[in-house]
Length: 363
Image (cartoon, rainbow, N blue to C red):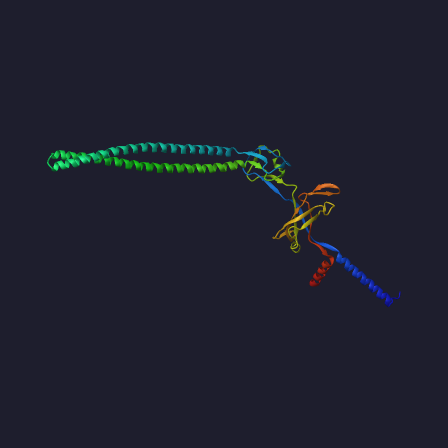
């Protein structure tokens, strides 16, 4: 077949038209850029059921697969040694309180008796001082009369002796008062120290009792969150002995699932919190029946399938999905791929251009 110039022009024009049409189509066509991350589904909330205080199982309140609420009793243990310690501590506290009351009562009695003696001595001192004043006046009168030779020396000396006697009596009572006041001060100090010492003993014992009761409360094993009990050790274990730290099961929230994937260094830089994701699970036919949102990306690298990767945590929106017309629930342990949309509605020409530039840079 002979190709003329006219035919060549028509063919070139047709090819140009096709090229323009292809460019226009590619310009209008858009695509989402995605990152595919392998990983597995895991339960978001798992609360281990751990024995906090050793003892024997006296009552089992929940069995395997029971639905529990936070605070529900799962199992009750008994510890006779702990019960005895609590009883002894309560008895000591009661004894300390009685001793404190006794100290206060004795102090009040001693103070009342000593106060009575002080009052009595003060009254006696007042009388003696009045007598001393009277004998001093008599001695002054006798001294004047003796100088005027109206009375004898014996009468004058007798007045002096009587005055000295009253002064000694006043002095003696004052000494007794001082000693009694000193005794009162010692009594106050001694009672105060004794009271404070017993009060400190009481405080220490009350703190000990509080600690023992906290341990006793640890014999009541409770659920720390809502969920389902997975605890095979509890069945048929009534009266069994459990040590502190023993794990008897878990409380699992089956309705809250996360996906833990591992992205390469080149992919993780494109993954950000809040990005949408859907999952591809080989076990099921559907490819986008489960959706999620990126929660966070790990900053520290880990080894996954022999390669250096970065963990990416994705929150699964709902565990329910339909596969082949049947309602199913995704559960922990299922492996798959998370497909994260990193950029939306990108022109295909832009992606092709980026790949051409990348290829040119490499070569």
